View 1 (cartoon, one colour):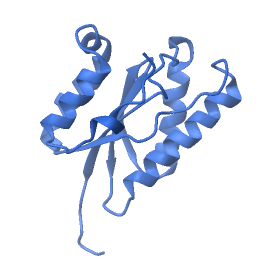
View 2 (cartoon, helix red, strand yellow):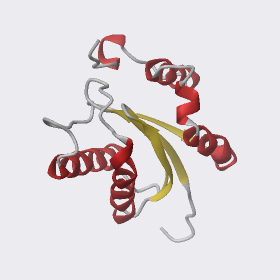
View 3 (cartoon, rainbow, N blue to C red):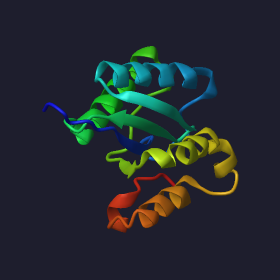
View 4 (cartoon, helix red, strand yellow):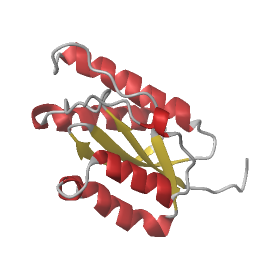
Amino acid sequence: MANTYTQLYFHIIFAVKGRKSLIQTSWRDELYKYISGIISSNNLKLMIIDGMPDHIHILLGAKPDINLSNEVRDIKANSSKWINEKRFVKGKFEWQEGFGAFTLGHSQLPTIINYIKKQEEHHSKKSFKEEYLQFLNAYDVDFNDAYLFDEIE
């Protein structure tokens, strides 16, 4: 539509199936580059990607005509296929079903970028589950505990 100007930002979080710590530092950067390529080819703007061995955070900019669920499905399906083709893990690599996505305004970008950059620091004090619940509560998201985490104890 002519004379329509937007920039939407999404902070996306998703975990390895069972919240297993499978993302190794030896191939993590390759994974992030691969995901960056998926994001770019889908005409989205990657702001930052980082995470921990059991989950990742992606901050991206998008136009209003995207279907976020389809985009995340594409990122997860293609990246898990790539990880399996590269045989980075023993057995089959899968992402956990679902994801968290939180919108933010342009003025919040520096804070979220800094937050994503400092994942190791955050997780020295707080588990992924605590972090995720904090986001859900901060954004006042209704959720059902029974479907929240598929984790291996």
